[in-house]
Image (cartoon, rainbow, N blue to C red; front, top):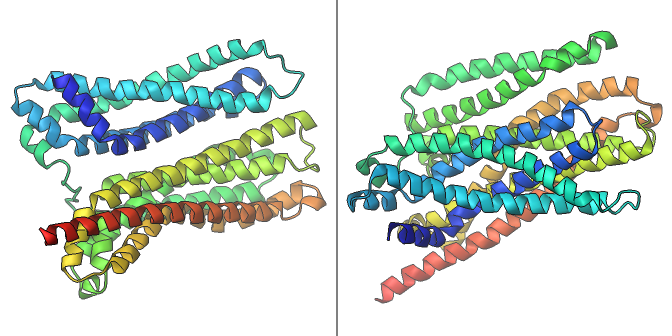
Length: 448
């Protein structure tokens, strides 16, 4: 009976699992493509081998967040199971088995999609024999399965600890619980860490630009450390500052819709800061992949032979596209879930005198903020670092490729704008449906 109830409720909450499913499928597809490249291109080096490791780390963070989100959505259901007499260990096992089963289905779908994408590009060349297809698929699936087991093991361990700590009363209020901050002034510490790490990042970039070629390897090997710390510290500082501003309750907050928007942004500041930092890193990684891939495809770039350049360039651009899809798709799904859950808030705002158009504009502002906030730190890094690196590349590359870094960065910006407009339009159209549906419910209640 419990198992049937769990499966039935999982089907009813499919829109919540959709976020988990899309994340797992897309990231596992990227890992599959990376493993195929590693197996076929034996001389690709550590850069290609390390890509699945990076994706696995990102996936652990994202899937951990999504698991907690699923727990919040089904917290009351689990509390009812405990009240009916189910043991907590059995409840934990049922939920973990449910998540693992869905994850395994995502693994099959992700590996199939990833190998299909790679096979379409690789086996179209008549020089590559199709008899290698089965061996490549089996070996790449095994490698991807090892990464999948690592990801699920870490996430399941964290989720199990979370479930074991929760009591029935906490489960009843878990969905509506916000993440507060004990020390409001803690954001100042993160601001200091961000300033220090950002200065170190600019210093490393300056060393890369101005030091002789023999010494460049040293700043290149450590530049990722201040970059990552600066990104995480920046979003901890920004959201902590917004939270403190909200708690100060200044008169300006109550003007227009500022209080509503600020409360929506800072309701779960710990999770929000972490998610924005991870998506910012994905955004930066996508930009680096795009610039590297387009540079490899330039005829004047003679560092490798033509076949190797085409292979590396195409792979990098494919990775860029996948990460952009991850960025916009997951943020879009997150916004759709929030809009659907805020239908009661929309009804309250209608009772307070707001029209449907005013509510739509308010929702559009929230969507724009959520889609744009992970880009802020990335744009800051680009504005400071790209002009310096462009000058260095002008000295290294042929004269025909002068200012190529600035041109490729501009092209990447154009693609980002296109992606942004498309996804914003889709979310806005779907949001109007939820807003109109909640308005129809209000009219129905009024008639009754």
